[in-house]
Image (cartoon, rainbow over all chains, first blue to last red; front, side):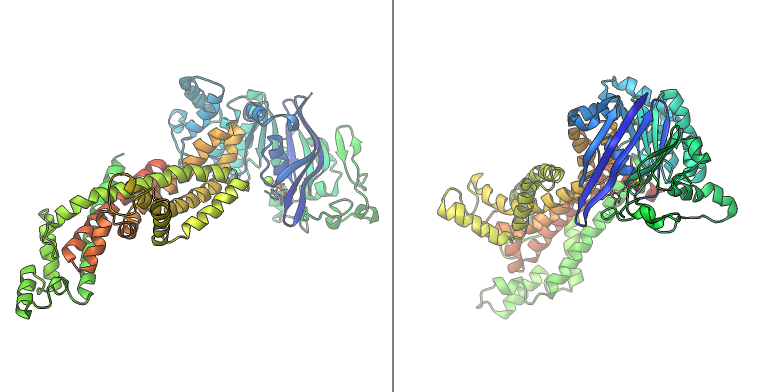
Length: 319
Length: 315
Ligand SMILES: Nc1ncnc2c1ncn2[C@@H]1O[C@H](COP(=O)(O)OP(=O)(O)O)[C@@H](O)[C@H]1O
Ligand SMILES: [Mg+2]
């Protein structure tokens, strides 16, 4: 059963340099209880996609077409007032940098309680709940810690607070945009462990965004690979690892830091993500693709079902 | 909390030092000015011997540092001296005028912030609307008006053409309106611009996005998260601007013959009546130091990061 169904979503930023098509006809589903990973290099439109699910894309971004079906309801047709009751309550979101995601002038407890009070929970109960949540996200000394200010906590702790805060109202979906990118490796692993554990405990689906296939391997059930505003490959995580079909996916997996660590060299994909104000014709990856042939620069590839539960948009996907 | 008290005491001590440094500096500057008060007030027919006598009586022939310590020792006893040009007690002169200046500057300060801060919040959170654009242009115009010029303009319009408001002196509260407007409008514009730019800056912060993602509505986000953070620099500005306002009141009070300290200071400077000048600057220095300390304490109260710094400094 799909909790979230994104259908042909397109988002444009009108800038001086022209319209930046940050997200172009992207479709994917997040099923109940699963962890879905959106993966791709920086600038591919992952964060924009994530923010659009909350209807929080910054100016001058506009959703130009598509549907965002959450439990069957199209969030793009919902009033701003109704969105207030969806954000936090139905969908929570945490961000890349926990250092600036929390308000510096309030204690972390106040910030968690503030969310709980939206549901008219009595104040005392809310504080108790905040302490319990801190226990859930494994912050030791939770009774003391609720009274800390964000700058008194480490980056990992702050991300725990963010996770707790966003899970406190039991949302059905948690969006985690690069939740561990700003943290060091040991803390990264702990946070990923925590997310997996809390998914069970809170019975939440998670949409995790990352540029790192290592994280995908560690936590995702299914994965969508995004390149330059387009979804290029979607599938079950083990199928994609076993049989990566899009050249971009293959190269991205090779650039996987955890594998290359032993080999001593990190392979990066030559070239850069194109300027999305003027994306390449045809397949957007063709200028960087080692397998590109004539047709790749001429027509956009459609999704092909490689195997059950595994789609790929590549003219040469069969290789 | 005890950190805050320790910090305040430390600041008070440096403040006292600053106050006396300012008065000493002022004393030195007054010495550099050509001529002296006796020359200015004495009738040309007074004999040079008599002038010398007067100088001696006022201690003006002593070296500058002796004069300064003489002044200082009296101040510590609570005596600000006597005006050379009128012979009145400086403390009496100041006491009579101090309330008028405080009324004018205090009201002006409060009006500026009460109007400008909400306006800054509203326009910044509706950026790129027509109302925002109009406010920005309007405040640039106000801001670039010299107070002197604005004062005369207001006098012309309300006092001379419309004849609805008194233009000079003090004859009841209606006399307050024009000097208050002259003093408030340009500063209000600058407070508005500060508040607006601070709000715009806070609106770009990640924690504002977090607040929305949590499910808070716009009103709650703007007042509880945005305004609260934007108020920190605005509060500092509030307390820092008090001495500038009193400085500015010299011009405004002179233009409108407002019976405050500014007008008194203006006259005392032209007469080189140094006990009066010293006395007024001494009072302004005290106000400045106190408002700086208050500003720092309040910003520490508003911003836990500053509290942490204070704690760190005291360790
Ligand atoms: N506020 C914005 N204004 C203009 N362009 C933007 C803005 N935010 C994102 N973009 C553009 O959208 C594209 C996708 O950005 P983003 O969603 O942040 O990518 P990712 O999260 O995958 O790194 C980029 O080309 C970026 O330039
Ligand atoms: Mg991003």
